[in-house]
Amino acid sequence: MFQIDFASRTPIYTQLYNNVIKLASAGVLKPGDKLPPVRIIAEDLGINPNTAAKAYRELESDGFIYSSVGRGSYLTDKLNGDSAQKLLAVKEFEKAIAEAMRAGVRKEQLIAAVEKAF
Image (tube, rainbow, N blue to C red; front, side):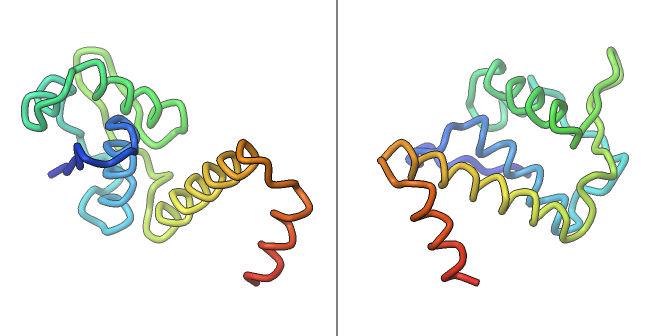
C-alpha cells in the first residue's frame, strides 16, 4: 500500500505521511478507514517502528488521523478529495520557502516569485 524511496533525501516518516495524504486524495483511503498498525507497516517496508510511529503522530497532530488505544488509527474526514492534495502542496511549498530562507533568499524575493507565478 505504501511506498518508500530509500534513495530519496526526504525523511522516511515524511514519505509515509505524504503516502497517506496521496492515497486519501486519490480515494484509495476514505474517511473512517482503519490504517495498518505501525508494526505491520514497519515490517512491510523494512523500517524502524519508531519511524512509522512518528509519521502517525504527525498525521494525528495535523488532524488527518485519530487513534484509539487498543483499536488502531483511523482516517478523519479532513482528507477528502482534492483538499488532501492541496494540503500536501501547501506543506511542500512551506518547506521550499524555509529552504530558500536558509539559503539567504529575502522575503521580498520570495513574494516577487509567487506574484510572478500567478
